[in-house]
Amino acid sequence: MKTLYFLRHAKSDWNNFDLSDHERPLNARGRRACEKTGQLLRKRGFSPDRVLCSSAVRARETLDAVMLAADCRWPITLEPKLYGASADSILGLIRQQPDAADSLFLVGHNPGFQDVVMGLTGREKSEGTLARVARKMPTAAFAELSFDIDSFKNIGVGTGCLVDFFKPKDKTIV
Image (cartoon, rainbow, N blue to C red; front, side, top):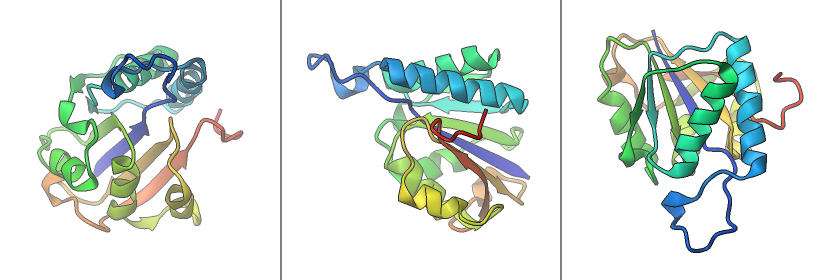
């Protein structure tokens, strides 16, 4: 069994136009969303085997703030290829992961994350969850997919089950 977790970076700050897109930090709303997400993950006992995080400042700050709120430290690898990655590129990165890990947590960006979650999902645990992802995977949205396979190399289109999807605005998550 393999599990993938996707967390889209939280809301970023657009106030400094001198910064490149890659260097934009989180804004106050984004930091609040990270705190809510981290609290929920702590409550659920969330503990991924590996973490791949985009090298963009807003993605790194998202992960740092979520880990702080979750009161956890997870093994992190900064992955520059996640910045602006397409669904195909993300899938390629997933397939390269070592099979010693059973769960992989990716922190990055849309539209790649929404596209890969949609593409990998063949079934859903709760009816309507996939439709919610299809409508929008907003900033700080989190998705969990499970796969009845032994190797990340075997993950493909439609092979996963969408187990969970939430966004910070969901009133029932914490």
